[in-house]
Length: 116
Figure 1 (cartoon, one colour):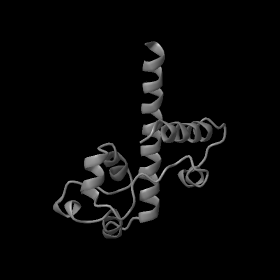
Figure 2 (cartoon, helix red, strand yellow):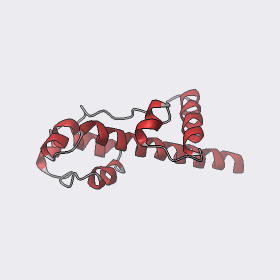
Figure 3 (cartoon, rainbow, N blue to C red):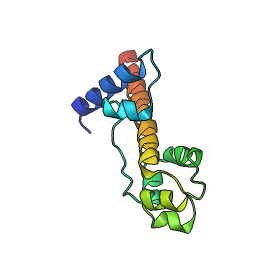
Figure 4 (tube, rainbow, N blue to C red):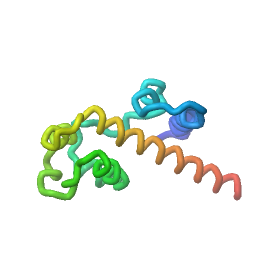
């Protein structure tokens, strides 16, 4: 990811997350503050492999079998249907979490650079 892209993501995220009003993940996504980092078409195990923190969100959303054999071959969308979850809502929740995590990581990186 280029520095310019990181900066743009951070700017959008900070503007939206620092707002006084509470916004839903969907509202933040529409404003461009929540980036589409994963899609519901991706395999659950691949998502967790790339972004281990996503497992927390999946469990919180009601997907408790993230380590079962099916997670190795089911897309997020398929797994959501099996568990009676809305795939669009789960995809949005994971992307909201990942965007916030990216924002935190970029802030930490910037703080380290300023300290040097």
